[in-house]
Image (cartoon, rainbow, N blue to C red):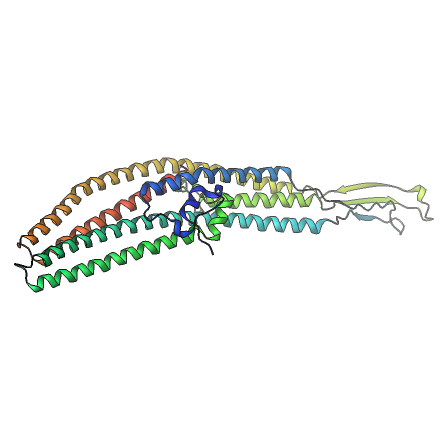
Length: 400
């Protein structure tokens, strides 16, 4: 299966041709990833709005009427003083049932696709940032190995004052640093392939085409005081179920209009069989409105669920703004700590390298200083990318 590149995801369904995996840029910056996500959001929102408008138009049009065969019977029966119970049969009932079953199946498939889009979208976001973080960590490992290589070259060029053990230890540490850098680069390739496979998957392409990659707003449920006892599903999930119930009730109501009513006719027939003396009354018991109350009840439940969902969205907006503010403060505090710790780590490396070249420090002290600085850099990178991932996730969940 041909895998598609990041550029295909950036342009969404608007791109006619996609770049292969080999065309992926070697390094994705954080700003590039942010641009990717925010450039595809408007196109997907427009596609989802168009699909919703088309669904509303189909629902307003209603089902097509089926031909009904009405059997007209004028006689009152064969026996004397008899009553006749007459049916108006519907030969299209089977087609109506098939239509209702197909509609229910389509509703279930639509709900499943929308729910699948929730997890897929979060998976794409995590894959992007896993690749970015792996690239940054690999760059730090390569930089540390390069610095050890430079010090090993100095040791080989100036062996005076250095014994064979120091030179051998530094060579071994340089080889270990190269191996770690190779592992980090392998992690980059692994995350790159995972992201490419995800963007080129059939599920992702289908959701992109349907405009359902962006999930509906999934906010917290209303306060427990306003809810009845017992667990309640999330309003967004409950809304999906309510919409399916309304569609099912409307299909049943449309189908019930094709079900014949009962027509009860009574009359008196003379004993000699003379039909001219017939007289009687007709009582019609129509069944065509039997599904109206169910459809109205389902629509009422849908309206109630829609109100709860709107409350949840408003709550999410306020809670999301507060969460983003707290996250921004934590990001600023982390950046301030990083601006203090990172220069100290760089100073530790410089002083260790200077002390080693001057003969004041040995190889163990040098390697320990380099590894400490590397751990500090990697930890700061991981914290920064985790915070950025959470921040963008909050903005996208808020519909921005």
